Amino acid sequence: MSKSPTVSYEEARKVYADWGVDTDAAIKTALQTPISMHCWQGDDVGGFENEGQVLGSGLAVTGNYPGKARTADELRADFEKAASLIPGAKRMNLHALYAETGGRKVDRDALEPDHFSTWIDWAKTNGFGLDFNPSYFSHPKADDGFTLSHPDKGIRDFWIAHGKATRHIAAAMGKALGSPCVNNVWIPDGYKDIPADRKSPRDRLRASLDEIFAEDISPDFLLDAVESKLFGIGSESYVVGSHEFYLGYAITRKKVLCLDAGHFHPTEGIADKFSSVLQWVDRLLLHVSRGVRWDSDHVVLVNDDLTATAQELVRGGYLDRVSIGLDFFDASINRIAAWVIGTRSMRKALLAALLDPVDMLRKAEAAGDYTARLAYVEEAKTLPFGAVWDHVCEVENMPVGRGWIDEVKAYEKNVLSKRS
Image (cartoon, rainbow, N blue to C red; front, side, top):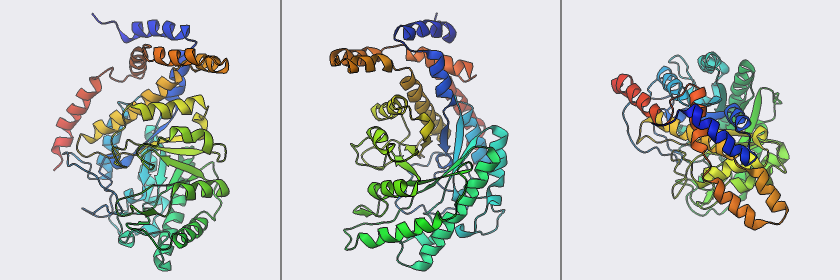
């Protein structure tokens, strides 16, 4: 007969204590650290502007698993179901194209907080925070691959107005919910082949961003972030908003820098960047993803990259300076299961990092005993983490082990299967 999670946890707590780790404190911190879950996993980045619109701008979602959310109410219900199976504090990350306009055509430069009032009320009722993003894609004025750096001033001004509008929306969310809303700017701008002029688009992007951010809005309500990318489909040779561009912009303009795990070279991890970048910027936003051969946004798993990311956040003492958001979309599997797998993986990685015997590792390192340091790292891999995680799920009234899969399958049978 297997032992109950509570009994197993009591034994695990003693084992960790022998390594100098307080499991109760680790659990408390892991559960209090918010994870911002992305709305676009629930409907394949569709939004509610136009029926059957094509993503474009280098974005692609593969698969056609049945049961996709078709309305905002369905998306909210699906999110609630996923959230009920994930321990810890949660936020929802919205894109501007998820506005609810009552059936009226409202272009993106004219969006207002009222178009997100239902989202705000829902988040308040459920105890979720909200984060936000302007949507610089899936729009006729983005069809040629350029937005804020577009050579046409009219198109550029449209997207500048959109950026300004989203800041007001995000600030309204932050004010209503009593928690600053991160508003993250990512644009797809770039060239498929080698450009003759790399400078001018970046000059235009810098000027556009300066105009968007010209209005001072309290950081109590709004945190402005900027996100780089290495390449995209259709912009393989040149991306205007490169890492170097946005790093410099974030430092000089005092903005939050977003590091997306999929937006660098395939063998380049983001964990090592934290202690460098946070020397110069006050805050980071993470988009946690899992690239397979390219920025393919696979569902997050507890792999080496995620483990390193969580460890560096904890070891550097950065949890209060970093906003953690997820960014993946897989339509080849049950979309709610994708949310649950990815978010539980992020929470597991955080908990595991908080349970790491880092004090013991640091003492060995400081003493120059690299033999012991390496040995401790390897021995710690077999500490009873599973018992601690099961305890977390139990005290949070979540299914322990694989029990959550049965709940998702039941929801698929009773709800998702009835969607045409």
